[in-house]
Each structure stands twice: as C-alpha cells, then as structure tokens.
Length: 190
Image 1 (tube, rainbow, N blue to C red):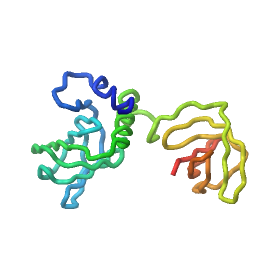
Image 2 (spheres, rainbow, N blue to C red):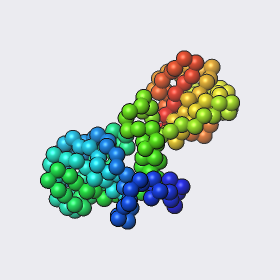
Image 3 (tube, rainbow, N blue to C red):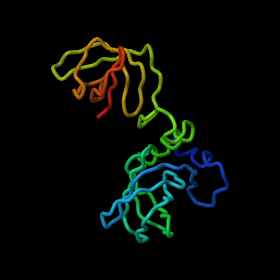
Image 4 (cartoon, one colour):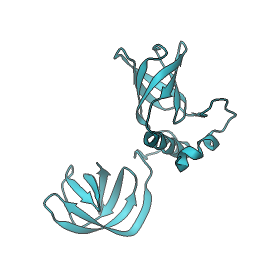
C-alpha cells in the first residue's frame, strides 16, 4: 500500500464508522447515469473508495455511474445507496488510480477546493538546479534546467523553443509542450 493510502484514515477529521472513511469536501462536477443522462452534482464527502454526491436525479443501486469532478477528474463507480437528493457511490478503480485520488484529495484539503489559482492535476516539487536533456522530434538535444517536476508534467528552462503542442522527450519521459511563461517552458507528460 502506498504512503498516501496508508495514512488516509488519519486525514479524516471526524469519527467515521465506514471501513474506508471519507472527508467532507464540496467539489462541483457532473455525473452520467447508466441511461446516458448527464446532470450537475457536488460532492458531500469523498475517499479513494467512495463518494457521496448531492444530485438532481438518482439512479438505481447497482447501476454504473461516471462522475466528472472539477478537481479529481473522471471517476467510475457503481451506485450502492440512493436518497431523494443524494447518491452513495463505490469507486471502481485500480490501486494506482486510488493512490492518485488520495494524493489529489490530500492536496485539496491543504490548498482548498478550487479556491486557489493552482489548477494542476498534481502538485509540483521545486527542482531548481537539476539538469536534464530535452530531445525534439527532429533529434536535436538541448541541456535543460529542471525547475519544477510532478507526476503529470514539468517546467524547464531551455534554449530551444519547440512549438506549443510539439512532442518531445524530457530525459526518458514522453511529453507535450503546453505553454511558455517568461523564460520557462511547461510540459505535460504523455
């Protein structure tokens, strides 16, 4: 079990009776029922194993549901309980995806749900001073200074200026050029 999942019960700030405790956090999103109908929703509480949603229309227990949450992305699950204005959903996910949900929830609990300018899908670590190699599609190689690094991307300082949308290699990782800011280049890993 990973570090984020191992400490998950400690993140919950109340006495919880569930096997997998949830944290109270409001995140807006949309959900799609098995019928294909899509509606707006907000989370009531969340864990890497389950979600309670405030909804406008309920599905049936056992039905598959897709949830798209602003700060967590796409989550698959099945309805385990329903109420007139709420659904309880068991998340169906790989251990890796549960880890990502736990990490993102931890970040949201410390930085606020949508209340900050930070919109990255994962937090970045300061790497200033580290060196790496940027390779372009045409085979050119450039020494780059690694400024920030996360699971989903990086920010680097490099002399090369590949166009936005170009596919490159950062070290051994495939990446796409997302944007330029001042003297740095933002990449998302593909």
